[in-house]
Image (cartoon, one colour):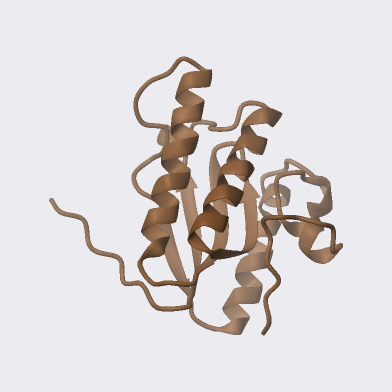
Length: 159
């Protein structure tokens, strides 16, 4: 059965979630998280996409992104997920799918939802009992956004 086409809007933000196949971990060590962030930065730059929040959990990823041109969301996510899967499969001598289905994307329709989804993304490690404070989790945008630390991936947004 054919998949339903995504409806994409110009200059809109999306909450994107991609999960490891069978909910398995896709980040096994520090270098894996670092590689994913490098890949995200690479394709953010190439496709001129704004990234407002992110959180890399052991078995899934949350992104809040705004593709400048409609239609680029599928290209950036395809490139990110493919690049990371190739890296992972080569490094761990695996083959086949790394990600469960295609990524999910939810249109951010208003400013209140934007604020709520940023909190949802950045507090994910706390809800998963990985850490007590969001700023203690290394693979999340919280400390860069709130504590205004330098980060090449994160963009500032205006309400």
